[in-house]
Length: 392
Image 1 (cartoon, helix red, strand yellow):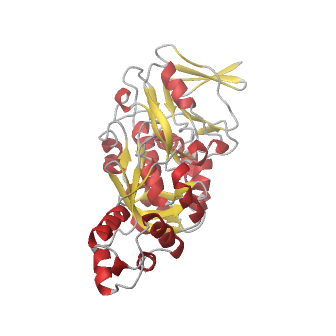
Image 2 (cartoon, rainbow, N blue to C red):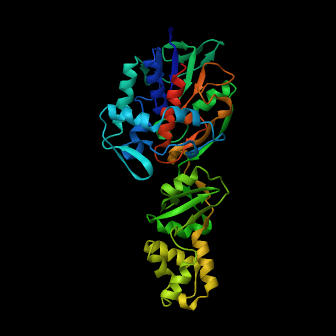
Image 3 (cartoon, rainbow, N blue to C red):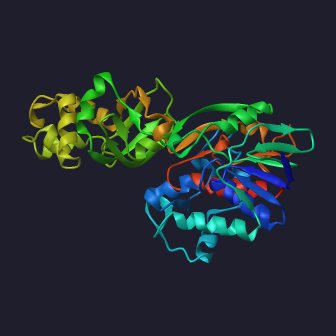
């Protein structure tokens, strides 16, 4: 079996791996980028409905979930959203800004993959696709990786294989297995940016499948004002996907169905229209089916004028923090990303290098850094890949 030597081997040709390999290659390093898939950037291609939400102009460390909330500061501060946007514009890729600072391609997400591949070409990166890797060794100075028909070696090895979210694209937790083999800790991975499921008592809400409304959803101290969507299995939509990254099993989430309403809005409605019902009052703001379901649950007696102020105050309070107890999520199959991963306690925030294993780096989704919905995870991929590439 033949042996080939490189300056760095990057495992995983997703967003972080492509970025890292390209930057290191353009710094003069001889880089091998390896992936078991038959094409690079599969997650990029499907992202943003095929248009790739490639970054967010509001990127900041407080928009990431991690056991160490300060870890992402260094990489994000040195490679910013504006830096990647400049690269996008250099390639003449048309883009637009949607809500909350999200930047999308006007055309296809494949333009971003083509950009990254061209950057790899400029750096002389060798790309090995359809190349599942076998045993990985380390003699203290060099890493060895068994590939089909050959052994490759390098003093630097980068884990950029992501997490287990969206397994239909070939995603696995292999990065965690490799990390553990080298003595690195792994924060328990769990699905993130994922729909939540309801059961039992809350089955009534599953009859609202397809109904959406702008709400404020919260899990613990995390609060997000965006659209929530009822599904045949439970709750989805941007607001729910956001809080799912903070939600833990057996914990409730809360939804404010009327985030713009004053606390005493129902009492005011009673004064203004004593003959109206709660359902009609809710339907002035919410979709009819949702208004009907909420009114049915609250079960106020007839017209607002026949209801006491105390009852109305209690109803308004419940509507501002409606408690749901999800019985689970739709799992890694539907999760956009993974919360948890290789522990930041074992990595340098400057170089993403393992503290106790010189030459071993972990970047992107493989690391315990998870962004909010809206381009934040791609920005972490670009920034962490760039940061690691500076020392390869």
